[in-house]
Image 1: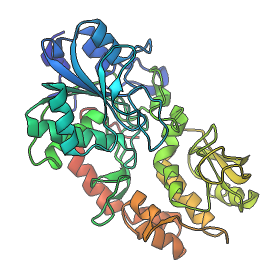
Image 2: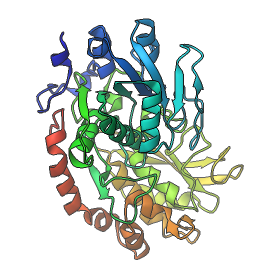
Image 3: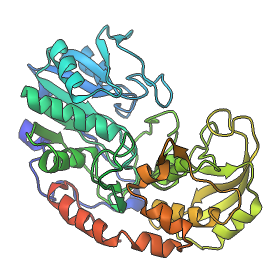
Image 4: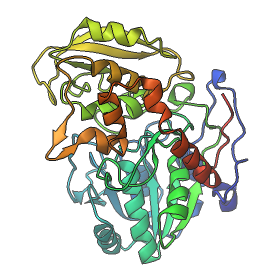
Amino acid sequence: MNRRSLLATGGLALAAPIAPATRPAVRTGMDRLAADGWAAVKGERVGVVSNPTGVDREYRHLVDRMHADGVTIGGVFGPEHGFRGSAQAGGSEGTGTDARTGLTVYDAYLATQEKWERMFTAAGVRTVVFDLQDVGARFYTYIYTLYDSMAAAARLGLRYLVLDRPNPTGGRAYGPMMTDGYTSGVGRLKIVQQHGMTIGELARFYNGEFLSTGVNLEVITCRGWHGRLTAHDLDLPWVLPSPNMPTPDTALVYPGTGMFEGVSALSEGRGTTRPFELIGGPDFDYRWRDRVAALDLAGVEFREAYFTPTFGKFTGQLCAGVEVKVTDPAAYDPIRTAVGMLVEARREPAFTWRVDGTRYWIDLLTGSPRLRTMVDAGACADDVTGAWAGELAAFERRRRPYLLYPRPGK
């Protein structure tokens, strides 16, 4: 295998469709780079942007393997939660020395592009290697770690190498577009809520659409993945990308139920063993579950659930609500499902949106006030989701040139 065969140069014929029912053997970008003896980075001084998800099938980390095999690593860069994953949401591990390898680990959480430049310069790197498991939602912060580090690498004239991994929610784009005036740390770029791209495809999209000066980008693609496959269809090991993303089930629901962070009356399940699958509040009861179940949404059932969060909203208080049980990942639509849940929750007298200062958090999550104002006005879920059809179609056309894997029809 040579370097040219590893690196993506565009086009859609890089991975043939494989029947999901057989749980296809997918090889990640890391797997392919390691199998080639690290040829794409031989002789380079590299900086590695990664976290605990950057592992092979034996759960050996990319940094540990590269270091043991003699690849020159100038520094490691840890995003939110840290390189080794010891920090909770909104936290990091700080800058220090990695106990296992002795390498310098830089704290990259909330790093500006200018700070990325300073860190890359201090580490003396010439090639940046990015290997992080994304979960496919606009409000998951790793995609902005990617963007800012790419922008900094472009300004410094560095090479940028993405080791691709499957999108655990599949390749379908869905949801509303981010709009001017509503960008924030949970949605900085104009993409739809469920972008439906791998991290390598997203890097190509950034490079072509958002970076004024393009970076020298290369992607080592996955083998055996296509857009109909979710994490449930694959034989890859799952490592929680963040403390509140413990299983593939969590990742599958998150692009939708992540919106409940914008509801002050309901816990999104943080502080339980099923974050984003358990949704409920102290002033709700079985009637919300019954109304949601009556929507007869595809690929999902709702269990009447009671839970007491150990942290986050309603710590130590008994909450009543639902557990979202995905029965058919291929038919399940996380955002459409969550909109239906929101519409029915809004009928409860206890329902309130979360307000931070003068901003509704749901507007930042969904990219505009439209969803909130429609739900407040009594719109049904079909009307709410139909409102973004045009912008979604435009986004799908815009992303098409940057896709690396087939998107077979349902």
